[in-house]
Length: 282
Image (cartoon, rainbow, N blue to C red; front, side):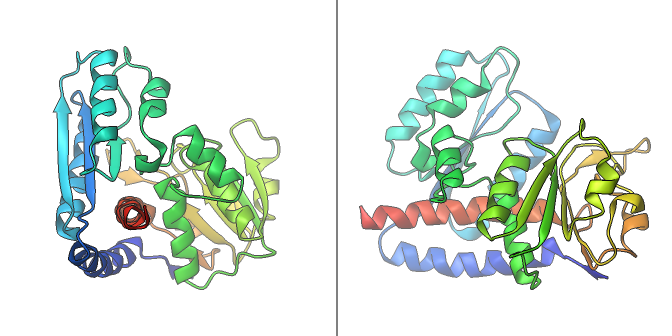
């Protein structure tokens, strides 16, 4: 069994990114990332701080716009319209979840697809599914880099994605399909899930339930990617995979924390850089 060290890989990529950003600055372009945070969600505050730190370390022009909980939907839409027109920003990110009175769908639709570093805009989803990706969701993008870095041959393998969200499950399935895996998507209503999972050479778990996947789900030698971020009864961070049970069976496995999480923010930075680089060709 080999542990996939997402943190070490993210740190290595961050150093390489800084060099690429310096080169881009020499050509007259500084990547710009603006993050909008509405309200006081504690988890969102942590994520945004991490993004802020990474953007600054990479040498980006970055800003966090913090808005009060009671910000209206129209005020947020007007702000996004302004940022869409501002050439300083190559990436616009609205931290989810938003307060209940604001429609996430309307807000995500308002972001210019070419500045949508989260890759959630329907235009970017369509580009991904049609095999012409531009901006792609960061978590699955990071997972693909991890598989490549650790020499996992994807072509011809049976891959199972447990979870069907627009953020991870669906784009993950498409990216694996694009690399010629045979892909199945399963979810909370899938019957005989352990039996199906046991046939997978690559198992990606993003169901949002702590310790959901046990040894019964895993084929010996499988590659197991755990996207889950949950808290147990003691407040400890755990994944969707029961790590102690699955680790001895898997050939490769991501830990929680230190696996997929660090790569998500790294890919966000990479995509902002790529968006800035594309402006040179315009």
